[in-house]
Image (spheres, rainbow over the protein chains, first blue to last red):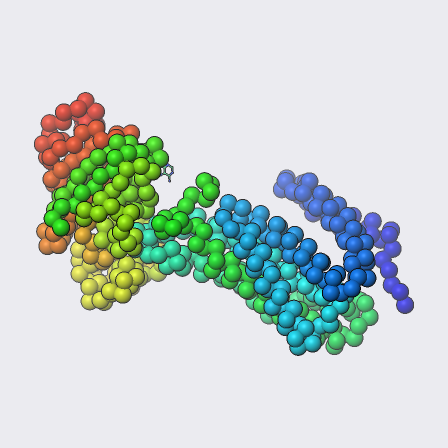
Length: 256
Length: 233
Ligand SMILES: Nc1ncnc2c1ncn2[C@@H]1O[C@H](COP(=O)(O)OP(=O)(O)OP(=O)(O)O)[C@@H](O)[C@H]1O
Ligand SMILES: [Mg+2]
């Protein structure tokens, strides 16, 4: 049986979009334009991607998959970079990080035959890994900047006592890592209890046995968990040094 | 190495201009001047928390650009104007510097606290529970823990009451004598400058307006600017 969502019911979704929009309007939260615009943009994006995916899925997987992955990683990099534009080498760090993560995850999936090398499996699963890593990197960047600005005095004090940038950043790096990893760990703890994870829901809706869906979900959940952790670690351990110059002095980010 | 010479010929971000000073070993130089005149900035340069765009600073006869930065910072100890303390306890702060250089001896903790007139029971006190003045004293002790050759003090007693000021000054004097320390200290307390300093430098708008020996310089200022400054303080 082919199930489909009718076009009319898609329109009904607008009601859902209107809820935060209305709340925002009444409480003057100032998100109104943002919400409306991002919903419209999101919808158009999804439809376009649907079209492109249909085309790419029909290509030879050895051509289609690399193309799709490169595009995904590039877009994710541009997006995550926004959170730390002032810092040097952000682009290359994020790009490098995402590539390393994706290659590692693919090696694991394919090496242990958990996932088959077809766009139908690789692309959505990679999408989740890359998307979550992107968000984690962006959050870590943001968090790191705020840690460095709140701890500026302490960092200055540490440097003045003879600490290296690495030693002086210890506190800020640790706090960044904590902040990035705690929600990730919480999510893993409550998986399947609080929220039925997206992929499983999708598979069950698509008619797959729940037990099979759970196995896939385990693969993806653990992959995401590790990727998100690695993302936060990469950002924290690589990026802290860009807050200093080669003379172990704090750089004013506005000037970079 | 009998002499320590600081020369900073030129600009630093248009905040400091034409600063040219020589400081000798054993000097106790007092820096004073209006708020925003560049006193803290100058101390930061000596500790290399920042570098001048032009000009050079010599320490022990050698340009500080050519010296190992962390060693220099240890030897030229700076007490920042704000006492930014590290988590968690007073002890964590005291051992921070020495631990960086694998040179921490727990027996010294008590002596350090004595220098700044705090009881030994404070060692395990969380820094969040300290008063402003206590924080300032811990910050001073933390720098002293590094056994610096030069001590840069940025208004180290600004948050203390008269009684504590007197005690810390006395401890500083002992410390300076015992360890043959050279001191450069920012203070807005001109009486304190006379008590502690042998030389004075008056800064205004990033320039040295007057310099001389203490206490004479403050008792009989030569420039109008310093005259005004002393009558207002
Ligand atoms: N990081 C900075 N970037 C730009 N300007 C700065 C910076 N730090 C200080 N300044 C400016 O440099 C000038 C000198 O500041 P500094 O802190 O050295 O003054 P100060 O003499 O120590 O003043 P106070 O007695 O208030 O502590 C001020 O005009 C200040 O606004
Ligand atoms: Mg100052």
